[in-house]
Image (cartoon, rainbow, N blue to C red; front, side, top):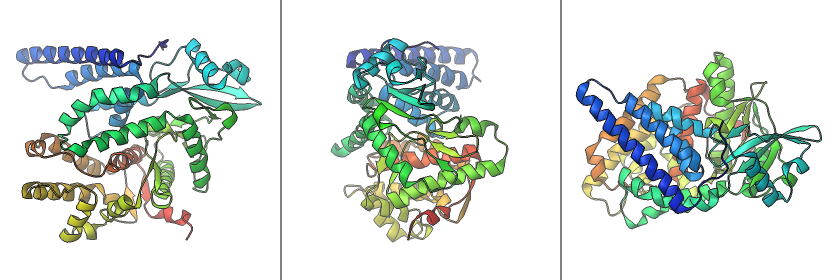
Length: 437
C-alpha cells in the first residue's frame, strides 16, 4: 500500500482537498444525469459507488476528524446507501499509512529515541492504519507488542475540519437556534480527547481493571514506560477483527457467546460505571483463538451524567413510552421538546419520538433479544428512509435533544450493528450478575 510522507494540516490545504473532492462528486452527478437521459431505468447504484469512492479517496489522505466522521457514519448501516457503508468502513482499519521516516521522526519527538532503540524489534511498515493513528508490531523482552502511533497534526486540524463541516451539517440536519453550538462542541471535545494518548492509557488501564471479571472478555496489557501523548504501547493479541470473524462464522453458539460478552461489557459500563466505550466499530474489537472478545481501543469514553441517564433509560420502559403524561415529561427533560416549540412542533416531535423509541428500545423490553432478527433492523432502516423523505421534518427546528444523545445514540447504533453482524442472541439482564449489590 502507498505510504504518506506528509499529511495536510493547514486549514487552506485541507479545505482545498475537500473542494477537489466536491468537484469530482459534481462530475459524477453530471455523468449520471447524462446517462439517465439515454437510459431512464438507470438506478443510483453506480452514482453512489463513484461518489463513495471519490469521497473516501479524498478523506483518507486527510485522516483525522474528516476520516473519523466517515468512520462514524459507516457504523449505522441504515443512514446511507450500502456503497458508502462498504467504502467508509475501510476507515476503521485500512487507510494509507505513514512512511517509515515519518514514523521514526514521531518517535524521536515524543519518546526521545528512535523505535529501534526502544524495542528489540520494530516493523517499519504499519500492520493497520485508521483515522487517527496506525499500529506497528514490535517485540521487547520476549513479548509481542502493538505500538499505536498518532498521525502528525491530527489534533491541530480538528477545529478547522469541524468549521468546514459545520455549514453542511446545519443544512443537512436543519439545526437552528443559538444553542446549536453545544453539539459541535461535544464532537470537538471528544475528538480532542481521542488525540491524547496519555488520557487513552489512563482510560485503558481503568476500564480493563473494572471489567476484567466479565466472562469471555479480555484486554491487552499496557506499557506506560513505552507510551506518551502520541504513542501507545500495549500487548499484541492475535485475532480477527469482529467483522472478519462474523463474515465467516456459522457457529451460532460462538456468535451468542461473543455477543453476550459484548452486551454485558456495554451494559456494565452504562449502568454501573456510568461511562461507556463510545466507539463500537469492528476495528476496535478482536476475536482471539479461544473465541473471546478483545477490546483494544479506549480513546473515546463517554461519561453519562445522572440527569441524562435516568430519563434516557426510563424511556426504554414501555410503561413510560405508552403513558402520554410521563412520556411528555421525559421528552422535556431530555431537551427533545423545547419550551419555545409551537403546538405543531410539539405534536409532530412527540409522535416521531414515540414511534422511534417504541422500536429502538425493543432490546430492553424483555430478558432476551435476538439480534439476528432482520425484521427489527429492516424496520429501523425503513424508519430512517421515511425520515429522510419527510418534507415536514425539514421545515422543523432540528435542534433537538441533549448534547449527550450524540455519543450515547452512536454507541447503541454501533452496538446493535455489531450484535447483528454476530447474529447474537443475548440475555439482556445477564450483566446484572457482575454488579456488586
